[in-house]
Image (cartoon, rainbow, N blue to C red; front, top):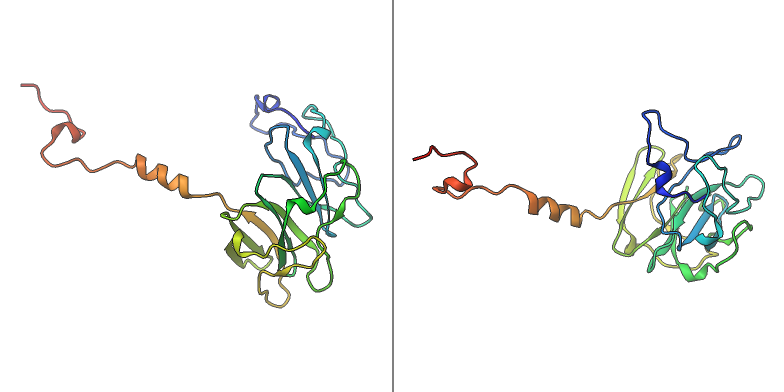
Length: 217
């Protein structure tokens, strides 16, 4: 469902409804977009769909939305991304495997279908736990059920085809599994802003830079 930012202009302390949800369903992802982008949805069983955002008509906050992807019995959506130029689709599975795949390997479809294979899920690599659109220079963090964390750069992950099982991204202890992947915000511009706005030491003997007033003569 698409809804303009104006619909959220009057927040309340207890929050406001962002989307109507039926039964045992739940919201798993929210992103800003320009209304002209493409949407990618990935499922736990390794299926995916790519469609134009224009296929989704704008609706009010409390609306239930329209179908993005049809799910086979037992499957569920694990991630949604607004595609970015130059990006690749990163898919991560619970047994510590994953891969990047170029966006062009996913043909554009109409929303609401069953989609196409994103990754082959087997006993070896496990079910999908996350999908995200990444750029080569971005950093990622993988988190396991037992609290282990791996931080790595996207460019270090192999780019391979859709219908593959991926490569090992993490070595997991027995009984552990990957539960989440997060794309880290680029800290470069933040650090530069902090450095440029940091107060500088006044030069000795210059009362105008000392931050104190001098008595009038």
